[in-house]
Every structure is written in structure tokens, then in C-alpha cells.
Amino acid sequence: MPLRPPTGAPNVLIALIDDAGFGSSSAFGGPCCTPTAERLAKGGLKYLRFHTTALCSPTRAALLTGRNHHSVGMQIDIGKDDHDLLITTEERFSLAMARQ
Image (cartoon, rainbow, N blue to C red; front, side, top):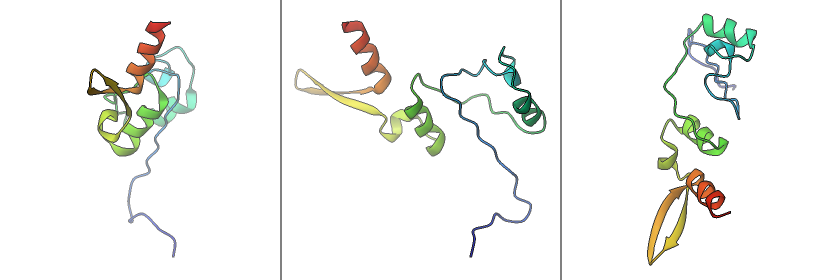
């Protein structure tokens, strides 16, 4: 038996585009012309308070779980002076870049 939504349930579309900020799409006032996204946005709700990260994996984890990416294991443990520090993948990348 196929899984079906309840009668009258709304249609939901979530679009996650890597390497683009909120301000990129014309649907949100940006320079990239996205007429289909504009039409969809005009006929529905736009959520504007979602936290994105510099990397796609933590952003996707936050979207899929509804929780902050730190809360769902999207960080890397490193050791320093007998203490384990919990840092995000973004911070690790920044540290690596700073060391070069």
C-alpha cells in the first residue's frame, strides 16, 4: 500500500542550492534571473531565517533535521594540550587555510 498524505495536505517544495547565498536568486532580490523560482515564491511562503554555512554538508544536515549543524555531529574533534576541542568543519578548514 503506497504512503499517501492526508487529504488537503499542502504541497511542500524545498530548494537547496549549493554555492549560492540567499541574495543570489531574483526570487529574493538577487541578480540571478530565476523566473520559475519567482513564480513559486509568489504563490507560497518564503522562509528567510534559515542559517546556512560555508559548506554544503552542515547546511544539508541542518535542513534535514531542523537543528543547528553543531547539534547533529557536523563538527570535527581535534586534540590540543590533553583537551579535546570540538570545532566545526568550517573552522577546521579556516585553520588549515591560515596555516598555509
